[in-house]
Length: 215
Image (cartoon, rainbow, N blue to C red; front, side, top):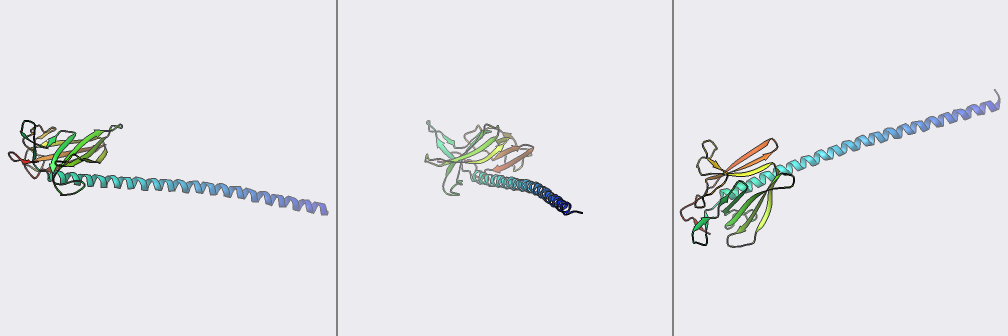
C-alpha cells in the first residue's frame, strides 16, 4: 500500500469519527431538551396543584371563619328597639331572603364590646354568583364598616322561624320576617355551591320582650 493511500484512509477515518461525534452531540442535546421540557412540565403541574390546594384551604378557612362570626353575632342578638316618627317602638331586626339586619353585642372588629347594628346583604356578581357582605355600625353613630364574608356561591339566602325547636323537623320557615314587634327564634343560613349544599341553623338567645330594650 502506498503512502498516499494510507494518508487518505486515515483522513477518511478521522472524518468519520468526527461526523459520528457530531451526531452523538446532536442526539445528546435533543435528549437533554426533551428531559428539560418534561421536568418543566412536571414542575408547572406541581406548582398548579400546590396553588389549587392552597386556594381550597384558604376558601375553607374563610368559610369556617365567616360562619363562626355569623353564629356569634346572631346568637348574641339583642331585642333593641327604635322609635319611629309616630313614637311607636320597632325592633331593629329585619329579615328577607337576601338580607338580614339585627342588633347584637358582638362586633366583627371589636368582639363583645357594646351594641352594634349589623347588616348582611347578598349581591349577585357579573358571573351569576352570590356574594355575602356584612356591614355594621355602633348604635347611635353613623360611621359604618363593611367586609366581604362569602363569595362564589350559586345561592345564599336566609330563612326564619319562630318555633323553639332546635332542629328542622316540625319547624315552620318563612323567607321574610314581616313582624316588626317581635324577633324569630332562629335563623337558617342556606348555601349552595354546585352539587354541595349546606344549611346552618342559628338560635337567637335573647327573645323579644314587650317594648324590648330601647336603642
